[in-house]
Length: 192
Image (cartoon, rainbow, N blue to C red; front, side, top):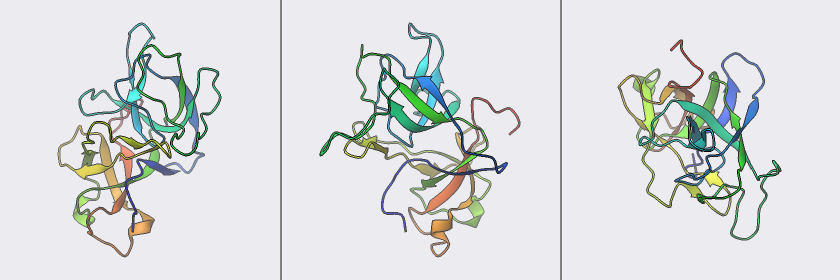
């Protein structure tokens, strides 16, 4: 049973290969903070040449991937500053360029909490990112995302449900269960 929303947790790849990350600069003035396990997208243009920002349905470009690690301007991994500050990138205008390592393989499979009741009728169906209230996008003490998914049936939304996560085999169709998804609107994907 899932304890809480923890964002998009990488599980495996569809092709059986390694789970690889690539490094990207963060947008110079992100509107929202970036947390580990956040879906992210890359903005085009801008004075910073584009940059990675947290995915929202409002900015709705194609999804780049999921944040694996947050790094400072020296490209060193952010660490905890206990008891209240986790390794995430704050939404701060004019800050030095920071970086994120992103799982950007379009064949990555992620485990995520579905806020609705998901069952066999939802397998191979589309999901979308659930709306998160402002200021509640992630846990600032742990640096972990609070993103989750919600049921949707229209092609073109961000995610495709592959099935229940292995943590949910006894909770078929239960509310707030975990599902495995792939990114259906990935920036590097043209075949789906």
